[in-house]
Length: 155
Image (tube, rainbow, N blue to C red):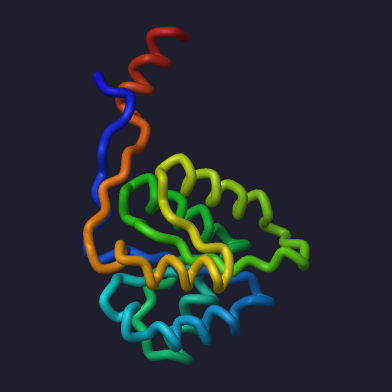
């Protein structure tokens, strides 16, 4: 059994939109500036951010719980289920966040599943303007079934 398996991110992306309080206005502005591109994809986000983006831009954004109430964990679970293809997370590096462990867990699971994650406007601009936004993209991830089988045999 192979160590890695190839998964495909489809042409239409499932994009999670997240922002710390100090960065919500910046993310909303970015979404408005990129509305034409974003309308071609399925959008979701943590509660307050999703609501504010929808209200201010008219983009349909499915909202989960707010970050401190488990929204980051919900997005992480969707990554594991193969239902999130890209994360745009405008984080605030200068303000302490009470749910910082949840944010770190989300970043970790995005890395494990090889999900692109923009953490600021510049990285979001580079990703959204990438040729991969308009096409399917194959990426290799850990073969989780093999990993579980191997671990079960060694424990």
